[in-house]
Length: 160
View 1 (tube, rainbow, N blue to C red):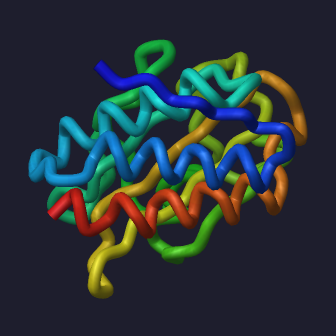
View 2 (cartoon, rainbow, N blue to C red):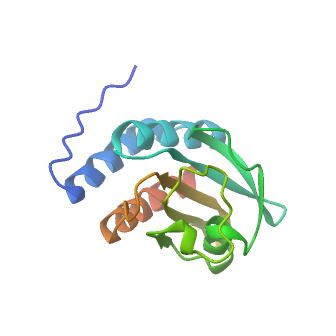
């Protein structure tokens, strides 16, 4: 149904291509779960070296598992706990090169070595977080953080 030409010659171009593809996938769709599911699938397909890509939704003040790609995951995460809970509570992206060194890391998959978590905010409200895990230490950098933040700015109004 959808075919994407994602070149990814460099990181900035990869994220521009992903943003264009995400726009095409989610434009006009009002179902938040469908939009998160397609976003997780898109990132899983085109970002290399991931072992988990998905969402935790803010439900009643705690993070609850949403659509994802990868192994089965933790279902509920309190705000302030682990990398996801910290990103949600602080409303700041967490770029973690070594999850084993992160205080209070929640190991849903023992193979994860690094993590990138981006809070999803809309009109000041925390909707949830995007969570990306990799089995490689130091997999994510500032370019990944900036690219995923741009993707979540595009996605956020399509989740309400």
